[in-house]
Length: 261
Image 1: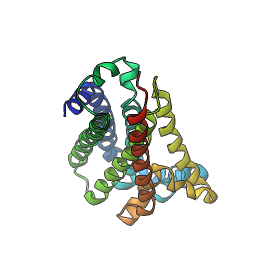
Image 2: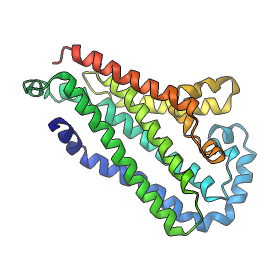
Image 3: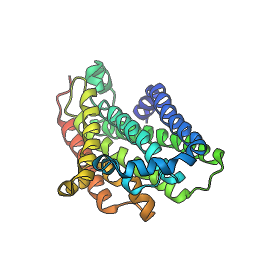
């Protein structure tokens, strides 16, 4: 597992910065909740009258006056956008970095097959995403405990699981694309994550665009659905996991036959 260890080690600074940034931002929002709680009912009323804007972000079905409603919107947006970008950046650079940094020739002289290279790199990306989410959950849970508010830990955990699955889906898609790249794909990865986010906004606004929920991983991270059902939308998760697997398969097929320079 030399490649796996090297990949994780090389990402230590990135993991630390992203995980602590996301985790501490969520913690700061939660710690502010007790002081803002009395004003949240007015905020909920204001958002309820904002039409499409409220629907776009799923705030028409959430009560800001509750910790769960506040957490789903504030914490969800931070973890959703930050986690999606980090997952995309990490995965899109995983396979093409050797050619970009001119280390492919050195790597391929070692007695390891390309299949093993792909496998260890994929496992390392998954491990990095798990580390990020573990740190974020610890920071978030710590802040919820600190404010001593009554919390439904099942729902909070489900919210974090949903965002973890969302990140893994983006990893699969971007990892597959990475096998086709030779130069930097950073912008492409961020673009894919941003596109998925806006597809969900469109799906929330228009009934005719609800089918997009089966495409974008943000479809099963809706805080309102998780809070109301105390469960995740498996009808959206299953297509998402299929897309993840397809992306990974493409990575194996392309990289094992690729003319690496």
